[in-house]
Image: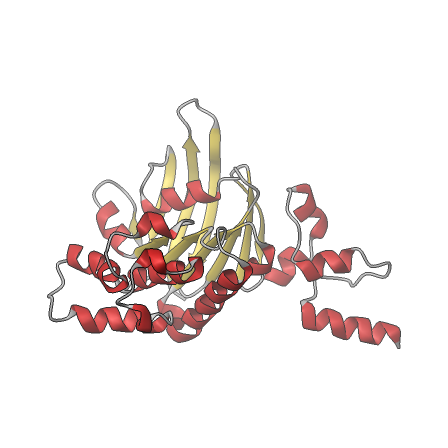
Length: 273
């Protein structure tokens, strides 16, 4: 598989010389959905800013699709990465949903005759095509976040980073966004790499891979079942397991590793027999 992101010996210090990352290494393959998890202040959002070139590493290299990130390449690298933030209201600039999606296309100087079809396609992918003439502030939180995602998709990035994109949403809104991401994964496959920064383990379990960081150090890296099977390590780093994992840990008779909801029900049914 093509390598989307490669981070080698990354080091980043704040102005007061407190080290956030020190010789941090990570590789993400094209088409992977990676959930980046950790407690507040663990370095998740800082890592996203470093990948986008919004802040500059103290040392080490970040490579995006084989292109080293530096002052000469930062604009080209950013063109390949879309970012969806926690508060969608901070991303809205248009009077209507369609205007908002069009904003990024106008910045790319896309011909106006091409825009309507691109806007419709992006809104259709996230299930918001029927809302294109609505004012963004009239939408629900989940709908706003899907419009923010459509605005990113319209620019056809190879990587999308979602930084706590569901944190401000109600359960229905969170479920809708996660279902949308699953749809994107199915539709685009290896053409789109997803990085979701989250503290919600029930969201992280949907990813192909879970990366746990704490104080800028990589703690765990593997499939959801591998990572959530190490519940002692997760708890030591201030993180809970997905709901079914926490439930399993509290049973008198415990499964050998992490089980999802369906697997746990099957395991319990066999246990009763």
